[in-house]
Length: 163
Length: 377
Image 1 (spheres, rainbow over the protein chains, first blue to last red):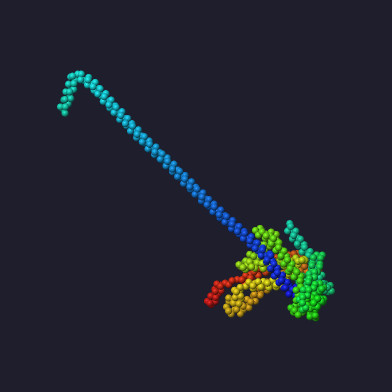
Image 2: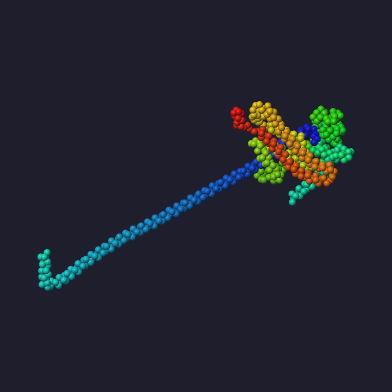
């Protein structure tokens, strides 16, 4: 390889290199590198954003789940309370009815008793009257025969002596 | 289908182009062919061919099938009598110091192996010294490689111009040029800069990207064997020298107190400092030197290999060798394509590593531990 005078190439190479290093840096490399960096940053941001949204979505879903769970529990609670209330109401009604019935029963019994007493009393009265009448009739009949009366008295008296 | 078509046309184009441009080169390298005609079938000058195709020059030979034209680039000299600018056409393609150019400033100049000397000073000298500035004016000519550097940066600028359009709405995915560029940019950012430099990586990104793409584009245009491509830029040690020098400046500019402390007071017993300190100081320069040589040697070797393979046709003077060479050259092209990316990557990643080393904060605990080990001894 034959060289020209060394200063030729050294001079021009240095000059061109420095000039073009400056120009290419200003007009080429810097804007391109900045653009690449910007794009990388925007991609990174987008990924971060997506991640954030994903996290938020998960959070939202968890919240929903929780809310749903709570609602379910609440429903359960309400149902339970309703059931209890129903039970209670039925029981109350039942006891009330029972009470009313027993009261009614007692009253009826009383009434029946009273009626029975009254009936009994009237029977008593009638029996006494009939008995009197019978006795009267019997007596009337008995007393018609004097001998028999005396016998009877005698008999009763002898029984007294024995006593 | 489209891919296959593309590959086949690429291969065919390569086979078509390579020998034709080389033949053109052979015709142009006047002295060599004259030599050959004079001595009959002596030998084909492969080294000359390689040199011709990898060299920088004041004349730019545009080599296309059925179109060969020499573009004479301006010669710009800082002579004893001031600035002198004239067309390189005035040397009439001479490189042997035979044609004397009398410029406007009253200098008498000759060109010898692409270097311009004062005609009077080197009279009779077989190999005048390159670095003796009394023998020659300072040369700031727009040579073929200077044009190529500009071309590479122009291509890079155009690429970035179109890439930037895709970023007008940064939230959209990159399209077109940007879609190709972005994975590379991201790779350099994440796997080279962030990995090796650390938290201050952003400051170095434009530099690393410029270096990477300059080397990559230079390597790639070196692989395309026809105008306006086909320049040997990264295989030119002066260009890799400038790249390495800039890397050194960047490394030193980002160095901190700890970096220098490590060089002048390395954490080893004081007796070893006698060896370590010079080694460490040499290391400052060896690192960029390695960068320079690695890139230069790899690319130049690739070019040399390719040209030598094509030269087989001319060495054996048989068209049948064209088939063999063609296949080999296509194969090599794919390897060189890999090397183009690989070397750009290596240069960039090592620069990043060196910047990272210069930026590294001290490991106080580590040193304390080492100190205690020394104390227990």
